[in-house]
Structure formats: C-alpha cells, structure tokens
Image 1 (cartoon, helix red, strand yellow):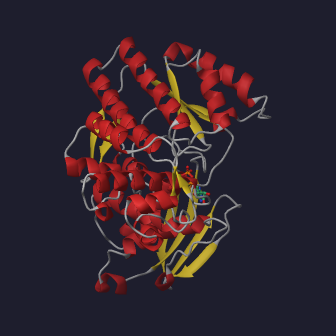
Image 2: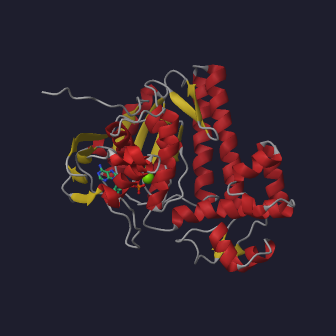
Length: 405
Ligand code: ADP
Ligand code: MG
C-alpha cells in the first residue's frame, strides 16, 4: 500500500535544454546538466540524490524515438519530499517514479500506469541496486482505501480489501540504510539467483537462462511446496564458497561474474543459498495466505489474528533465514509483542522501519509504549510523528496541471 507521505515536484519546461534540479531540503545540493548528457556513473562512495532523479529521466529518454528526442526542452524542477529516507519506505522509488512521470508528461508521452511502473523498476537499477518492482508498482497503481496484491510478468495488481479494524503503524528503527551504498542488498539478490541456477543445473536445465527463483518455478510449473521440497533435496544448508559454486555450475569465475554477479558482489567469497531460497518460497506462501485471509473473512477479529501471525512469522524468517534485520528492528518487534497483532520489518531491511498490524483499541497504548520505551531512551524527545505514525492505504502518483496565468 502507498503511504500518505510523498515526493512532490514543481516542474517547468524551459530553454535551454538543461535539467536543473533544486530541493527544498538544503542538504540536497542544486544540480544541473545538459539533457544530452544524462548518464549515471556509479561512485563507490554511494549515489547522489540527483542520480535517482536522473534514473527516472533516463528511463523515459530510453524509449523516445529520434523525432521525440529532437523536441527535448529543458526542465526546471523543485523537489519536496516527505517520505522518510533510507528507511525502507521506498523514498528512492518515489523519487525515481516522480521523475519519470514528470519527464513523460513534459514530452507529451502517454503511458499506462503498468508501463510506467515497469519502466521505473528497470531504470531504478541504474543506481546499482538489483531491486524488484513492487515499490514502483504501488507508487503508480495504489488506490486509496485498499491494499494491492502485486504480481509480475506481466505486471498486474489485484485489490485487497483489508479486514475492518486493521490499523497499520510504522515505526522507524532510527538506523538508516542506503541500499545502493553497500553490497548487502545485491548480495541477497545474487544468493537467490545462485540458488535458482544451482537447482536448474541439478535438474538438467540451462542455468545461464535462469535469473530468479520465480523463473525456475514458472519453467518447472511447480507449486511453492514442490519448490521447497526441491530446495531441500538439492541445496545444502551450509555456506557455499565461490569455488564450490563454480564447480557445481561447471563454469569459471569470469562467466559466473558476468552471468550471475553484480559489480559490487563479484568479490564476495561465501554465499548462503538454502536459507535464502527457503525464506523466499515461504514468504510467497505467506503472501498468498494473507490474500486468501482477506478474501475469505473480509472483516472480523480472527482474520486480523491470522494476518498478524503471518507478519510475525515473516519477520522471524527475514531475521533468521534471510538475515536482513537489524538489532534495533528486532528490538521494536520485541517491544511490540504485547500491543500488536504482528510486527515485521518493511522494505529491504538492515535498518529502516517496521510495520505493525494493531487493533484499533490498542493503537494509543502502543504509540505511548514505543515513545516511552524505544524513542525516549534513544534520545528522541519530540516530533514523534516523524518516526512513529499510524497509516492507511493512499492513492498513487498523479499530475497536477497549473493553468497559464
Ligand atoms: P529508501 O528507498 O528505503 O528510502 P534508499 O537507500 O533506496 O532508501 O534511497 C534513499 C535515497 O533516495 C536518499 O539517500 C536520497 O539520495 C534519495 N532521496 C529520497 N528522498 C529524497 C528527497 N526528498 N530528496 C532528495 N533525494 C531523496
Ligand atoms: Mg529504495
């Protein structure tokens, strides 16, 4: 679901053909470049804010034909964002998606929301993270008042009516994590890829064509329990060294690096495959279960209890099998136990936020408990709303047009 917080852009087209970016937050410096030279060069020190914007611009530029490119005008942009940054609430995708939508509009392109979401999922990867597409999908497809089940290839979304009395509370762990600045995020993507490729090889398939566990599942046409059984049968639970993987795939380091690894994961020597795959398949089962529970029950307390329990299991799996939690996230989960139906980390992890499912009559007590027992001891004494807030599903991206004065 989309949150209340957003990225808001004020955009004017202008001569000459320059992209000029300002930000209302002074920690983000003004940036300027020629439209001709939109390129995103990755620096080991981590990405710059304007490069996320340029991902969105480049995503649109990539699909323009020459005559459309000839009509390029400059863009003067002021960015104002209220999505907490590097907190697992996808401020990066909000910025990339807003940039792409504004650029498409400036060039008179009319694209479906699905096309925009797909394009933004791809072009955010220019920043160096091998992300999926959920965040960009919800940025465009979100509908006020309902959650969405998002599926891929082709991208589609189904409305999910949450049971009555479902309140979601987001809590920031006060630990930030920029996903493009470290290898952790891509390492998990690569571990899942290697798990899929080793399983493919064992089953006599062309492993070089398989990039994701989901690709393998579609190819084999198996359900999630059958995939779990395959993973148990063919993957060892302990760590694989890079050499072991090379031997199992009958390949060499150069080929492995080009087919399976990313620039920031090519020096990693040890990979865990079974726990990652086991988490992914079970998490997919929990998503299906969550959807089914919402459909079957519509409302009612028992549905809320089931959903909360799925969220709790999800966090435990993210913490123990996918290993992307953080001690402060785990602390929030612990502190939440007596007040919420379930709490899990949200977003990529390694810091950022948790989301809790809370019964309406427990919300105030939970907020108070968190202020007293988590935030105050961590030195937060006011502006609690910035780090701890109740939320409900909001609408997706839109364009406001200012009439000529
Ligand atoms: P998340 O998507 O979880 O918030 P990421 O690490 O993926 O975290 O992306 C965060 C980065 O996105 C920030 O470091 C910044 O570069 C960029 N960003 C997000 N919001 C804004 C904003 N309002 N203004 C400028 N840059 C922003
Ligand atoms: Mg992000």
